Structure formats: C-alpha cells, structure tokens
Amino acid sequence: MSTLEPAMDVTAIVYTSKHGHTKKYADLLAKKFHLPAYTPAEAAKALREDERVIYLGWMRKAKIMGLVDALQRYRVCCVCAVGMMPMGGMANEETRKQNAIAQDIAVFYLQGGFCYNDTSGMDRFIMKTVKRGIIPMLENKVHPEPDEACMIRMFREGANCVSIDNLKEVIAWYRGRETADVTDD
Image (cartoon, rainbow, N blue to C red):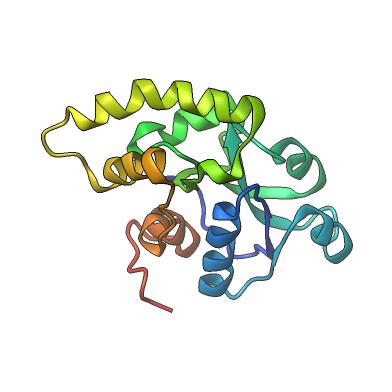
C-alpha cells in the first residue's frame, strides 16, 4: 500500500495494452473514478502535457511498456503495471525499482492474463519455456492461491485474471484510505 497523497487532481487515465487486459483495468478504473481513459495516441490529442494522470502499462521482461513516454509527457502520479505473475509474485517496490519509478509516484502491480493464440514467434517460444518451469512449481503447492490457480489456467489454456477486486489498493490510494470497498461509488 502506498502512503503517498491521494490524487485528487488526476484528470485522466492513460494506458498501453497489448492483448486487452490492461485496457480492461483502465476501463474499470475510468468507470470507478469517473475519468476518461486514453491510449497514448488519444491522450496526445486530448490532454495537455502537464496534466496529472494514472498510467497503466503491460509488462515485458519486468519493464512497463510505454512508461518512459508517459513520464516524459505527463505528470504521472500513479503507475499500474499489468503482468502475468500472481499479484504477490512481483512486489510493488520491485516493480518500482526495475522501472526506475520515482518514490513520489504510487506503484501497483496487477495480474492480467495470457492467451497462447495471441502470441507468435520468439514470444511463443519464450512462453513455452517459462511454462515448463512454472507449471510444475505451482502444481506442487498443496493449496495454491486463487491468483496462482489463475496462472496455471493461463499457461494451460489461456486465462483472463482481470478483476475489480485486484484494484482494491489502487482505489484506496485514489480515495486516500487504507482500504477500499470496490463496490463504493
């Protein structure tokens, strides 16, 4: 949980999505916070460069795609990194460190999803290699967590783990509280 000030003057959500999971999170937050959600191309037309935004980006090899451009263009006050790993698998501070995100920016990691049909070439080869190591490790757990079970489904048949429940910490940060009821409006 971030102890940073809540973002009362955020004007928009900007997101970069490859397979749609990050877009789904952006849409959920946009509805919850009554803010517009834009792709970088849309945001370039709709927003001034100094506006405060929440940025969401998909991850590849621990790097948040599109983040560098967003940080250069806008006053990013919150970053949500969307990846395949269970939410406990990559700590917010590790995400911050690997992407050189300043301490005054809130950082959250969210589990997204994966579908083999959406990958090809080297990405598909890499994912098959990763699958061979991760699936046995997760299946050997006596009681896998729900996000770990989603990860197993993700590697076996593809899965979408996007959920409003995964956004509790982001919603709490935005509202300036320690916890958030995701059903509140």
